[in-house]
Length: 264
Image (cartoon, rainbow, N blue to C red; front, side, top):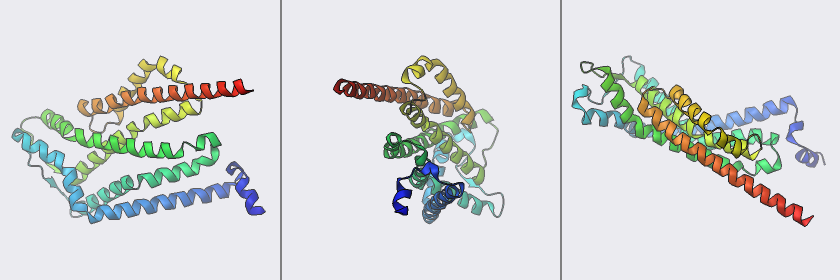
C-alpha cells in the first residue's frame, strides 16, 4: 500500500533530500551518456578533426591571397592533447543531447500538469532537431565567416591558427546557433501553458525582431555580420512559425471548449 500511495502522490510532495537524490541520478545518467559519446568521438577523432578543419581549408584554397594553407598549429607540448579532449567533450555532449534533454525533462515533469506532460516527446524531438539544425547552420556559414574575418585582418597578415583557439571558435559557434534555434521551443511552450498568447507576440513582432538581432550580435562568437545574419534570419522565421503553432493550438483549445459547452 505504501508503494501505491507514493506513486499516486504528486512529486511536488517529495522532500528536499528526495529532490536532491533525483537530481543526482539525472546528472549521473547525463554524464554517462556524455562519456559514451566522447569515447565514440575519440575513436573517430581523425575523421571528426578533418570535418572541423574543412571550412578553413576550403577558405584557404579558394583565396590564395589570404596567406594561409589550412593547417592548424599546436604551440605547446600538451595543446594537441587538450584539443583532442576538448573536441571529444564537445562532440560527446552533442551525441548525448537527446539523453541529456530527456533527463532534464524528467526532472522538471513533476512540476507540470498532466496536460503539459503529454508534450514531452514532441518537445524533446523538436529540441534535438532544432539544435542539430542550428549546429549545421553554424558549420555551413563557418567558411564565409572566416573569409570575412581573414579579409578584414589585412593583406600582409599571415593566418596562423592555434588548434585550441580554432576548435573553441567552432564549438562556440555551434553552441550559439544551437541555443538560438531552441528559442521556438520555449516560445511554443509558454503559449501552451498560457503565459503569453499568440496575439500578444504578434503585436510585439517589431520588438521581437530587434531583440533577436541584438541577441544574435551578442552570442555570435566570431562577431562578423555574416554569422549574425545567418543566425538572426532563421531565428526570426522560427519565431513566426512558433507564433503560428501557438495560434493553431489556441484555436484547437477553443474548439474543444466549445464542444464541451455545447454538450452540457
